[in-house]
Length: 450
Image (tube, rainbow, N blue to C red; front, side, top):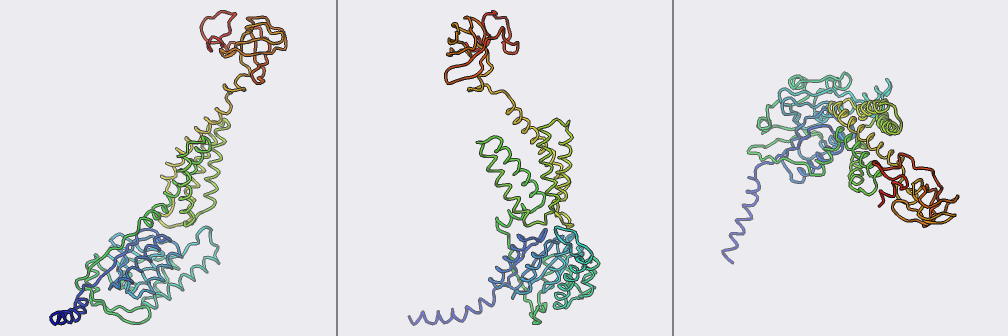
């Protein structure tokens, strides 16, 4: 026991020293693509983990054409309220922080860009409907005021930042640096962290903090499987494909009950498509054109229009797909290649399946009671009015409206339980006979039945 006490005391005093010598931590988060609710969820969750771990710096690497206003504001609110300094870095070379990305960049404690990148072009666009002049001015003024409040608190040139809103002006990394919109230009992450070691950060509340990043350890925050999956289906092209496949799967199930698999798969895909479309800026005129295309395909299968309705359906679906997502963001709408590759096969499959169903419904029933009506048979016994007839190779109890001698031909008029009602015929129709020579006195149906 006397020996244990000095060891415990030494450990107690060594523990703070060991903690002080722990290398600084940086959590890296990537925004690569459109700013939408799923990407906002991923970024804010990563920032919260960094806050819980008490890292030295949050590094948000950005490459985005912009996105939704609500999701952008959610990210900015998290950046501003973060007790951990946040650096937004537009990288790698060739990347951009446009529209919503411009706001996110200027909201950061440290704004940096790689050579060959650009930012700006932040004029807002109303989602879902065109804006008149008054509404456009109101939305632009609101966005500009929001940007001024952010840039002013960060010590950046608010007047120049406004030009990104009112004039849709875009800035290279050098223009942004000279215009005091960003703080640093760094060729890669390593150079950025070197420049930030010992850098004094002015926080949003006016306080200052010196970054100590010597020997920094970097942890990359990866999205969960759920976030990755939902981000994939929020791609407008994927959402459109899921929508069409879902409709096709349900149609196949309804027209062929009992297959199960097309119905299950179609239902799941349709729900996923509706989820994605509920978060994307949908143009209802485009959705109406897609529904109109489906109607055209149904009518083409029902009526002979020599392909006019089918062609109209393909054109309507392609136009509807191109109009479905109402946004001007690059890469945030259905491409022409996707629209054509989905519309043409869908038209062919739908028309083909519909014609099969219509022909099957129009075909004469050949089984059961309805299948007996109109069939030819031969009287095996005299019918006066009752007797036996041979139909489909089977003997039936028959009732005739007129006397029929044995061996004569009869046609079935109706079926009453196990009794058939027949009428005499002079000779069978050619279509009812089987090929090949047969005796005139023997009905060919009976030969086939035998």
